[in-house]
Amino acid sequence: MSKRKRILSGIQPSGTIHIGNYFGAIENWVRLMKEYDCFFTIVDLHAITVSYEPSLMQQRIFEAALDNMAAGLDPARCTIFVQSHVPEHTELCWLLNCVTPMGELGRMTQFKEKSERERENVTAGLLNYPILQAADILVYKADAVPVGEDQAQHLEFTREVARRFNGRFGDYFPEPATLIGRGARVMGIDGAAKMSKSLGNHIGVAEDPDAIWEKLRPAKTDEARKRRTDPGDPERCNIFSYHRLVTPEGALQEIVNGCTGATIGCIDCKKVFFNHLRRVLDPIRERRLELERTPELVWSSLREGARKARAIARETLDGTKKLMGLL
Ligand code: ATP
Ligand code: MG
Image 1: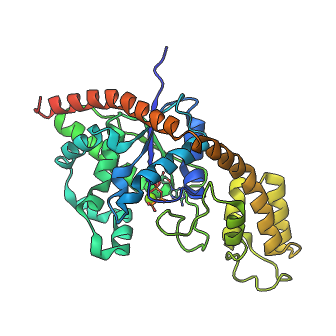
Image 2 (image 1 turned 180 degrees about the horizontal axis):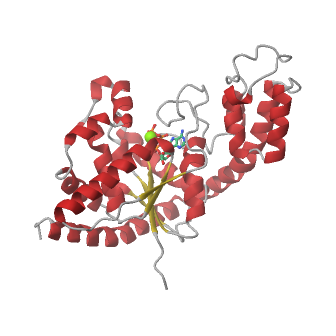
Image 3 (image 1 turned 180 degrees about the vertical axis):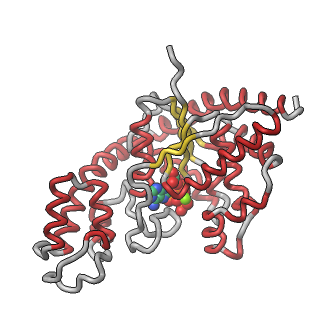
């Protein structure tokens, strides 16, 4: 029997999981579970690289697990765990720290954006984030990593770390491929920046439908379309970029015709999107409510996931240490 290829991906318990996370990454994870040996991790150690509230962390981890499991990650068919429960990630991170020149770290887009946002709290952890991410991936010798477009640069960096290690100590780590989801870069509800847990511009996957509609109703569309009788340009409308994620081909064409021909108003167009979005999110919210009733089952799946992950991570780490002369 041929060995299944391995996938790893992660999500931070840094706030509400949103439709950017879903269409950029999670939807792909669920699909890939069928053909790959999958590892999904809730990366709490990444979430502490910026300001956070310690008393909320366990709840956030639990909610991230709920959202992901409700979205279709089945602990019986993949390994889902909390990053800090597998200390081999941080151990490998240190080893990789010592083979990585620091110059490149300051040039990473995510570092630049996040350090700009919080100038008074730029930690060494935030700078080293990509090395920990490389360790998350390489510790399982993952073949591929499904992520949104914002993480493509970090994955290129991971491949460089692997190449550098292999060049110095011998061929050991595979260079993981990047798999970008269908919603590669979902914009925030304000259309100004990528949707992010930390920016408050999100539509949550488990958010109450009324609350979602309250955000959608006033949301920006094509700004050049001032009156309902003006023709609009779907390509300049953030809501149309959302339509592409959920609205079937025929209905999408009707939206294009209605918008360019000024026969549909923005509110009606948003209603069509809202209804299609609900087809995706309603079942997730319902499954989440069920899972929420048995928190112990969720935590025990995470513990079991960490146990399985650790066995593999330990083996990789021992091999790494041998190559580096530490064993
Ligand atoms: P934070 O603001 O704390 O960084 P985030 O919303 O960016 O949170 P992450 O946990 O950093 O979420 O990322 C989880 C996964 O979701 C990654 O694969 C990332 O590429 C993807 N992702 C995040 N935001 C988007 C987005 N707006 N569009 C598409 N994919 C996204
Ligand atoms: Mg992010």
